[in-house]
Amino acid sequence: MKILKDLLFLLLCGMFLCACTKNHEKTYKESRESLHTVVAITVVSDSSDKAKSAIDKAYHELDRLAKLLNFYSEHSEVSEINKNAGNKPVKVSVETFEIIEKALYASENTEGAFDITVGPVVKLWDFKNKVAPDADQIKEKSKIIGYKNILIDKKDSTVFLEKKGMQIDLGGIIKGYAADKAVEVLKSNGIKAGIVAAAGDIRTFGKRHDEGSWNVGIKNPRQKGSVDEIVAVVKLSGQAISTSGDYERFFEKNGIRYHHILDPKTGNPAYGCQSVTIVAKEAAITDAFATGIFVLGPKKGMGVLNKLGIDGIIIDKEGKVYITDGLKGSIELMIKDSTFA
Ligand code: ADP
Ligand code: MG
Image 1 (cartoon, rainbow, N blue to C red):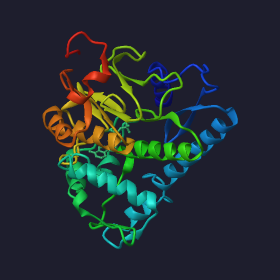
Image 2: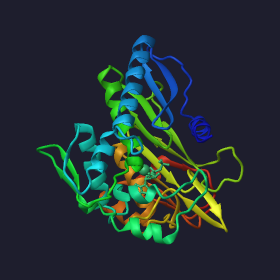
Image 3: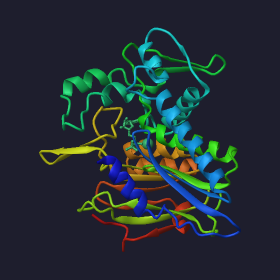
Image 4: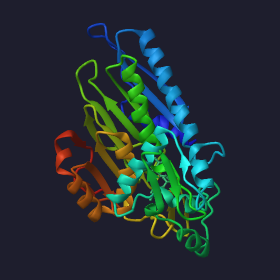
């Protein structure tokens, strides 16, 4: 169901472009399941064989990274790191090391609001069966959350979780990171422009064949029906964009919305925002910061974005919209004023 919703979202965002020609160039697109969601790849190319072969290789890269970095698989490198928490450093691949480095960069710049050591608390929440853990369980597991207890050694390419029971979960950054890597694969196979869209984590590169911008829609986080409503369209030329929202994975009980973006300080869902969209060069950064800024809330979140020179749109818990100055020229709002609900 989630996959169908994701696909519908991408369609509504106008990401599936018509395959018209200019200078023999066409737009080719494909959607497949990977990273537990629907990933759409769009490329501009003068040859269908070249496009197809590059797209196949990009999906292969996404599947490879999904396997390597899977929090829930016994055989991933992430699992190897987690199994050795409090015991010994684990030698990891370049990619595992790199994504953890990027995650730590996001932690350091969001006062730890983005923190991949939320793993043990993430596992307590069951959104499918609508089960919230009790406060004692959360309190117990929250004790071992803390990105500062991740020790990395670049020379040896090792990662060590200092405390027993610690677990890293890369769910808040993996889709963006994998989208960046898939773009690298497309580029090295001769593709000069396109999009890799892993649900709400999207990386664009190059120019559309009609020289237009790549347009990505932002959903109304409180839409009533099942058809997606777009509240804004962001025009991109080579950047990445990610949205994190409290409507992606959630359940409601006694009027409270329990969702999957957790405040590492409490182990409970963060309640300052309905959705956060980030625009930057890399999708690993937009993915991690969308999650982290969501947890920080609108005030602190805007402060971080302005300080780092990263662009974003925050829709706070009341539906008030905040937009960074850098984005004002490339965003089209579909709502009359800056508040909707
Ligand atoms: P989505 O996966 O829906 O795109 P996010 O990118 O915001 O959403 O990632 C949410 C996922 O990240 C959660 O399902 C969980 O695995 C993990 N996570 C939850 N809270 C945090 C946090 N504060 N910091 C880092 N990762 C988190
Ligand atoms: Mg994220």
